[in-house]
Picture 1 (cartoon, rainbow, N blue to C red):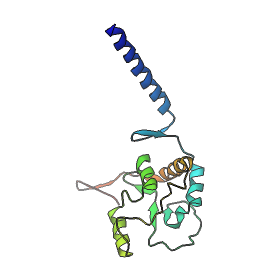
Picture 2: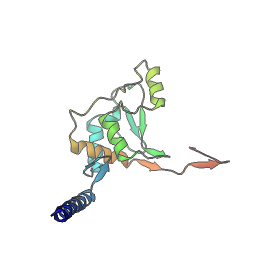
Picture 3: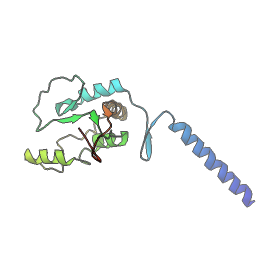
Length: 158
């Protein structure tokens, strides 16, 4: 009787794992849960519709002219040594105060603002999950990983 129960439990676990693997095949994993793949073109439209270009530039992307004067402009995309993964970009949109770089903290202080809070608005109550996944897919595609330069035993970013 015990062996039948153990075998049944093993089969259930195996079927569950196979289901998870099949379900994850076409989707983008994000540390602990999976979101559907976004649409890059729709993501650019979301970027414009939510006025993200009001405070962000994207290397090589033509955006509408700003109508506001932000305290500083944050450059997104371009050639970088480490491409932000999908989860990092998702977190930056959903919780913009989560990881403010020291460079941007300094800019916030120079502008007389709290360095622990970005001026970026919270979009959680306004943005749909589809808009969010499209936006993150668009942003993720804007980064190009470059090899670091190497000189006399040290890597550096040119």
